Amino acid sequence: MEIWIGADWDKASCVVAYACDGKIRGARVKRNPDAVASFMAGFKGDSVSVGIESGDRAWAALWRNAGATVYVFDGKKAARFAESMTSSGARDDARSAKDLLAMVQSPSHQARANSTAEPAVNALKLRLEAQQTATQDRTRLINRLRSLLRQYHPAIEEVITSVDAAWVLRVLELAPTAAAWNEQPADEQQKALSGSRRSDRGRIAAALGSDYGVVAPEEEAAARDRILMTVKVLKAAREACQLADRNLDALANDDKRIRALCATEGIGKVVGTGLAIAIAHAETHGNERDAASQHIGAAPVTSKSGTMGDRNPHITMRRTASSTMKAIAFLCGIQLVRNHAWAKAAFTHYKSRGKTTASAYRRITRSFLRVTRALLRDGSTFDEARYISALKSRRVEWAMAL
Image 1 (cartoon, rainbow, N blue to C red):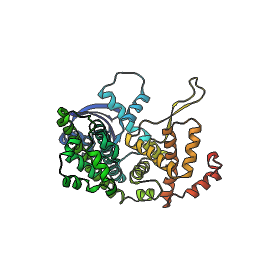
Image 2: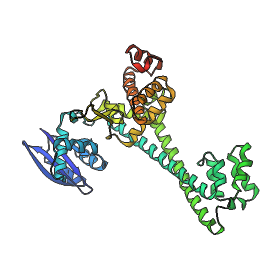
Image 3: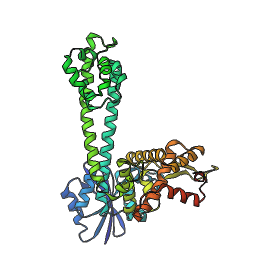
């Protein structure tokens, strides 16, 4: 017998709705393995499928370990599905559980059962998200340090191009202000500058010792502390970013899709990993034509159909994709436009039609995903000349001049 369960969770328990004997019943299950196993014991011998919102991996693991097939739904998609079911009525946990039950029973989502591909895709997602988070933290701290140097040590901020270089952080840790630099012996100054280019050391040393009078003597200690704390945190963020890069590289090198995608000019490890995740997701969940583009946020949606008095339908980019995947779609479009003639021509065409820059980049990513999915299926790599020839044979307007 097939048992379907919708589970709306919080930190302490799950409110579940399940279909049994043609009726929808409800229950509350506490957050611990014994409680979940006890609830599942009532369906011994039956095939149990649970629909649950993403956000708490432990809850999904509890149901999976108890023997259920778990379907993890994006929260925004679940909310939109619930909106399509009804237009009124108070929202509560029991109502949400019933909506998840209807969602897991719907034909469009029954194909989302766990498969052997999911653990590998999830591993790539986790590594990619860690790398993106580490990069964002590093960028934020670099901007913070530049702001502090502009305020307390403007001379050195003007001559340093990369404030998170190892030798720069070493210098700022030794002497965060001009007064602190001038207090250092000459041999310590030369030792601190050993990582910089020899031709620039005189100019850098002069800047380090230049005091524009922006720091009053009574503010010296506070200025030193603020810069030193930021430098220490930035050093840790730099190491975390390097570790995340190495971890992503190690995992990406073992994935055939990523290696094939990175063979395309301009597609680096980060973008290649994001595209591989989207393609693997499409293969795991139905393999529809635009499933990969939908997962990465590169496929548009119709927000207004044109039947409500509007002359034309209103098309917008979808919002349900994760911020990490949408950033990958945007970055992929940028890299393709920089490195490929067809992408530059497509970008110019989309802009001439009034599309935003972000929309144009994501449309280019969508086209690239469609092509690369076919190439990966055939074991081939992207050939720009062949692709342009195919575009011309189809009489694509913007490609005819290439």
